[in-house]
Image 1: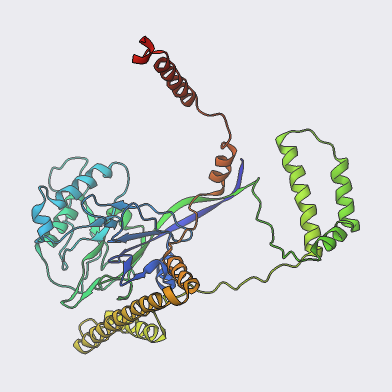
Image 2: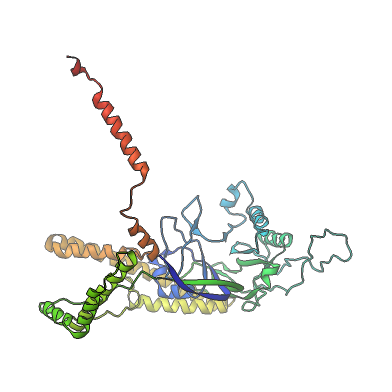
Length: 466
């Protein structure tokens, strides 16, 4: 199958990172929320951390390929980096240092290209310099391969605390000539907070790049905090100068599915009359006169011509059903209008809180409404479950038909997105090779089993000696 496509040259690459604290939270799938999908679909690369799922779950976002990287200890899905806090129980149980392991990875990949490192580092770096100030090779005899650090923009940070993990990150940047992007680029010149919780605000999600790649970053942005999309983290996004080529592929032998038609009692007569129309008669005559070879290309062309004749007659004589307008994804049955309004208020208050994080009145108001929203959501969900159980108990005896209909509706609502991740070429190759010759190993194994059975039958048993 030959592919034809046009190439598109792009000069930038948009990337976002987000610690979302679980794809499924509070009985809600975030990928089914159109607001969440709108937040991430505008980027070329989406990096999600702490998805709390494993390899057995396939996430689907239209237009994106999914590449999971999961920890062996649990089923938490993640991309790029998540560094546990320095004093956590998980860190104390490790027999190696996480920062040393990251530095080894940076050194190993440094020779292959530029390094871009991002993630939830659980580090507070304040405004410490991540480069050697006034570094120069003029006065001291150094190695020829040594490149002095370039002086870059002073880094700002709204969170002025420096902890032990932050010092380790700064030392890592200095020793490997990596630079923290937060608080230095257009879009985040103040070093905004990236984490909001009841204990306060902090900057723990970072983007770190080497010096050459740092100069190619067009902007870096910390989005507003949305509590319904993440437990306490903001989305960070950036754009890089990167020239690459995308090929939009189209298959030559695959055609769109035909239009559906409604078949009624008088449809056979109307369809026959449509075939007798002058245009269709001319197509049928040319189809019968054209005597071509039995090659695969000629057979495909003849089949397509015959389908066009039938389709032309059907469009004249038959009625097409009305298409249902595809609206937004339906909400959960227990998620009523009151919860929807409360959710919008919580989102708007979260955005105000991210703009004025040090205002105690705004902070207290936000967490008050957030607690009320969570409590109301749990109550609504529990009421919905209890009502469904009561209906099932009542209908099981009184109306079995409605009972099974209700069960089927519940099962259909729990089905995951079954949209196919397989492209059309893979399907075509599968059906082309479906009835091909079976592998010789199968026949050899079959012959071997037949020989064993024959030997068993020839061997004498106790009754044969009588």
